[in-house]
Amino acid sequence: MTFTAPTSFPSSAAKSRALDDLNREYAAFRKFHLDELGAVLRRCQIDPQTLTDAYQQIPLELHQVRTSKLSDTLLSNQVDALTDLVARRAAIKAVPVVKAPAKSDVKADKVQRRAQANPVLVEVFQGDVKAQITQEFEDNYLKTVARLLGVYGYAPNFFATRKAKTNQRDKDRVTQDAALFTAFVKGGTLNLDRIRASAAETAQAEVDSVLPKMLLKLGRTEVTQVFAEAGGIVRVLGTLDGKAVCLSQTRTLNVSPLGRFFYQYPALLYIDGKRIVEAQFAKLAD
Image 1 (cartoon, rainbow, N blue to C red):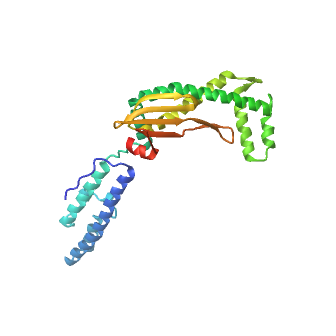
Image 2: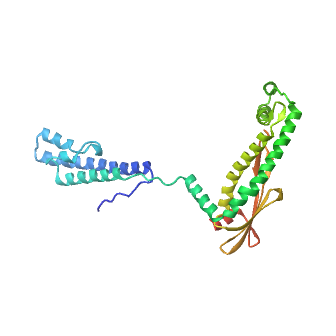
């Protein structure tokens, strides 16, 4: 059977396995044919040096075989087999490794294609939704600073306060408070420019995080309308395989025990007015 090398290997490990398979084949060949060669040479009463020379034509490892040095001492079928194994090894070595795209790259490509297919969703998230999140963070930063001023005063010694705490969570909370206070209070005065800039930065990062998830969740849905409503609700209307799709997502701002803000996004999905769980919708929309 004619050997045909693959056009590429998906990984270096796959290429290494192919070479390992060939090496095992060579090891079996070597054991069988050395025994055969010895029997033939002994029957013919060949001198020991000639026998040693013939053995050396079939070295321990396949990569050590040199077809140009094969002598007439070897049997013709052995020469043919060795030549074939060497050629197959060279063919496999020449095959390039072409790695499949990483999952992150595949995901990013899918997000980009779905963003291009649904520009209205991108527009609303980068516009109205981002503006709402920016305002929410500005308001909460101001409330946080007011709380910090009430707890620590205008000239706090956070180092001493943290050192006095016995519980690690309390120490971490003081560290978080110190970071926010330093960022937003300067010389006993609110740094409003810094608060606004930080809120805008955080809002952009939040949109960049949640928008791809929304695009992947909607899948092949053709989005027709998007509404950024009060109370952090985003309502998406569209069609999927001729059926009406409605997604209602609620944005809920929470605060961790250390005082960090984070959002949760519970969502409800409907097809033709009937509620459907996300896992079932994903199978339909993918």
